[in-house]
Length: 68
Image 1: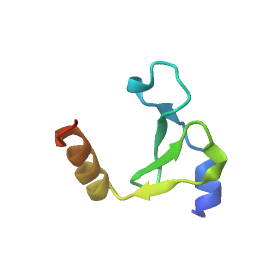
Image 2 (image 1 turned 30 degrees about the vertical axis):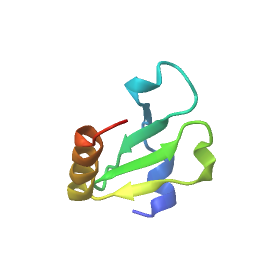
Image 3 (image 1 turned 60 degrees about the vertical axis):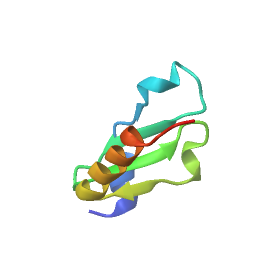
Image 4 (image 1 turned 135 degrees about the vertical axis):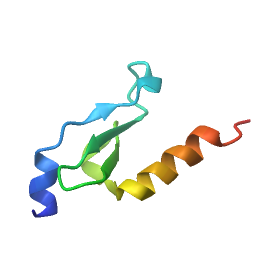
């Protein structure tokens, strides 16, 4: 499946941490596998695609990172 066709059929979800604000990210699960991530305030700016294993690593990194 071509990427541009796949992107048009995705169901985007905004992070629950955004509390309705526009300065957050949206994520979609790709039918062909993996996940897409985009900026909620500028969705047409592009997306980042993660394979399933990269997504797991990414989520682990951001949920276990020390925050100031």
